[in-house]
Amino acid sequence: MILEGSRCLSDDCIVLRVAVQVTNLSGERYWAYDTPLPPQVQIAVNINIVGLDQKTESTVEAPFVFTVGYTPSIAQLSVKGKAQVTGDRSEVVQMTEEHKKNRPPPQQVIQTVSSIALAEVIIMSKSLGIPPPLPPIGLPSEQSPAPPVQRKESRYTT
Image (cartoon, rainbow, N blue to C red; front, side, top):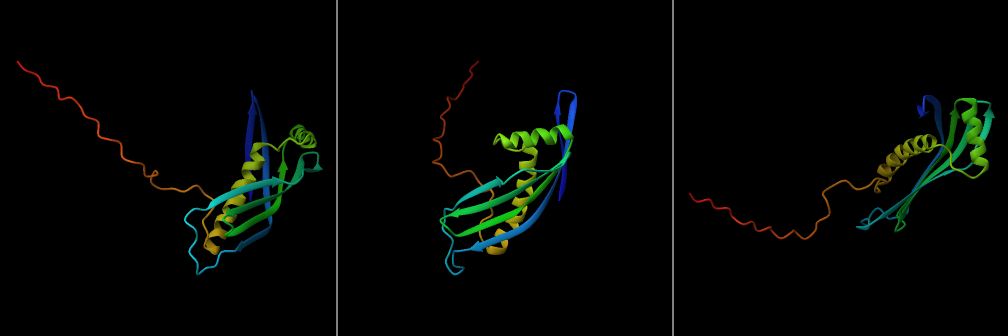
């Protein structure tokens, strides 16, 4: 999967091209199929960019691991791969220097890796019959209804 994006600083736009290659998919369900899943499940999503390796003047490679853990322990999902980032030479050098200072890669790289890995784990979660790592969509939580507001009736006489 290849995604392109740009980041503009004043009038200068820097275009980064991020190609994500998935090298390993792993998913395991620990909860028995004949036992109903618990009503409350916490889902923890973690992305770890393992390193940053400069391949050419304008290309770096960033291996990653994307994991999803459930509490209680009903399953675990994992996506491993590498992101190949191509861009302006100065941007690539800056990315490498920032990495040496233990700073995170550009947000665009993290977002691209996350979106592709998330799509993979959603498919795996469906296959395993477990909740996907998405926020629940539905009605707002039920709260006690607010007491009705009493309004004074306006009366006009002539």
